Image (cartoon, rainbow, N blue to C red; front, side, top):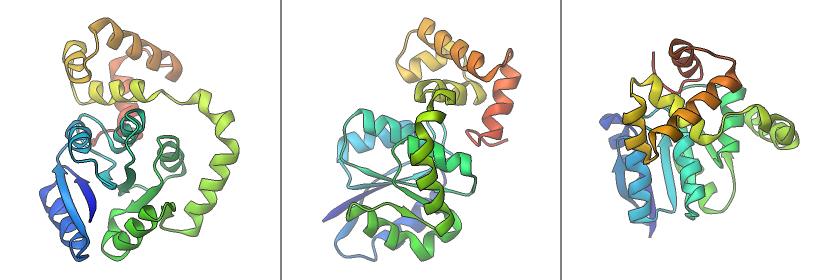
Length: 211
C-alpha cells in the first residue's frame, strides 16, 4: 500500500485530491495538512511515499516543506502543486529537492501519472518546456546558487510578510530571537532592502504569500 500525504490550506482542494488518489486501490491518503508546519509533522509521523504539497501555504510554503523533509532525510518524494508558471519558481523548486511539479489546473488529468512517475523514481513535469528548464537549471545551478536566499531566510521572510513578529517567528521556527534577527538581516542584505515593507512586497512578488 502506497501512502500519500496531502497538504493544502483549502478543504475543497484536499477533498478533490483525496478523491483522485483513492481511485487507486493500492494508494491511501495517510494524512491531510492545512499548513506547511503541519505537513512536516505529519510526514514525520506517517512516513508517506509521496507528499502532495501546495506551493502557497501558511507558515511554510511548499518549497520550505520540501527542504525540511530533505534535511530530515525522509524518503518522501514531493509533488508541488501551483497556480503559477514561472522559470524562477521552477528553479527554486528544483533547488528545494522537488522532483514533481504540477499545475493545479492539470491535477485532475495528470495527478495519477505524476504520482506513478515519482513512485518509480522518475521526475514529473507537466510540459516539454519545464523539462527543458530543468536541464538548463541543473547545468547552471552552481552559478546561480549564490544569489538565492537560504531556506531558513526564505522561511523567515514569508513569516514576516504574514505579519509575525521576531518573537513569534522564533517560537514557530524554534529559534532564538537573535537568530531570527540574523536571518532577517542577512535576507535584507542579499536582497538590497532596508524596510519590512520591501520584504513584504518581495514575498508577494515571489508568491510566498498572497497579496
